[in-house]
Length: 92
Image (tube, rainbow, N blue to C red; front, side):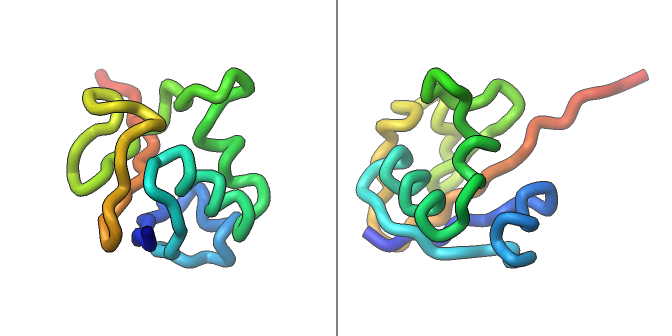
């Protein structure tokens, strides 16, 4: 399955400044492996040493937060839009 992945500004150093790239995979885990093959180092910014999504990174597949779906096992249908969004913290 080919999907489009939106890359946040903070990770664009890995994608040669591209804001959107394509990747392959039937699940989010496979898509992240595909991204790592094309853009070495990007996966470590999204997944921790235990292979879990980092707390400060939100990922959406077709506008659905994967944390409330199947996590890394979330299906990624052909043509799906995946968004990687760093969490924003702060306040008054």
